[in-house]
Length: 403
Image (cartoon, rainbow, N blue to C red; front, side, top):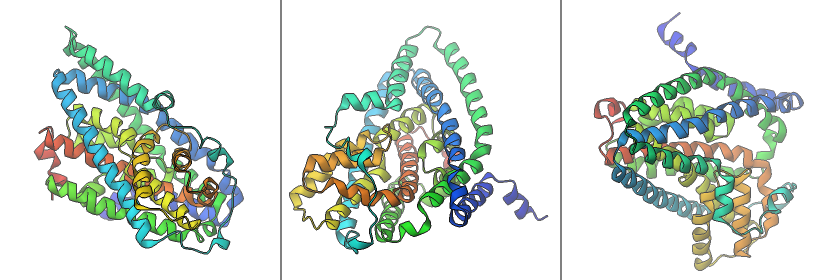
């Protein structure tokens, strides 16, 4: 056996890719059986989610506690939030511009398949509430508790000893996660088989134009916007994508960026990012830096306006972006987040019919992969850029993704 072939057969990426292809084939040729595979994908995601809370808590507490400089913590946090707001606003604007130029909603209306969107639109009339957002978003809750504990730890007399013990626990958690990730091919297979078996490949044809626009837009955003930010920092987006290819494939198979968050944090630290920066930026980014979701929300809203021949003035477009700047921040911790956030946004505008959400149900699952992949790449880039700006990036280790 050649060395090249041996490297392929011993790499997790190969098996995840094979599992995705197998899931597509099973979903296409045996849809009834494929739908039954849903529990495999869900079980893998649920298993990964068990690690998210302790990893967020430990990394933030260790980041703040080991830093021992609260001014630095505040500086990184403020810099992160400013970065998130600027980049997500750009992603919202790009979604609007591309949708207006390519007109994905100008399609044959008779080809569309109506589905029941009641469970999503029933909550559309609810006004956006920061209190409801905080109550429903577990990530934010853990984030806040971890920050409080980390700040308290920074004042403890035996801070070094406590940090040392927490680092041992953190290493144990990441080691356990490493073994769980060997199940990634099974999770990817289950998720992809269910998706294709449930909705079928044919269901994406009527809305293929929208999907094509969405994927093209996200590719442009990743390689030109995020790529430009990386180049400005002396880094290469292409090399970074190759570095996190396993995480990208896991997201592709499971349609969830959460499944790859622990692995992303581990790889960013191994790449040379300081633990304190990774611990602060990545978890916060999962609630405030959803680039892919922002693109989807703005483009889907324009698509529905075009579908119903609803003209939008410049002022209404600006209002749409403004509302999404607020509501998109609540997308991370809410079940069915894309539809709920989009529905609440449309309800607040009173111009685009809410029933139009039904048109998106058939293909939303296929677009969720693009959203999740863009989200995880965006958070990885944010961490690298902020670490570089704070001189918290090991130059020797990060040289593998230097331009």
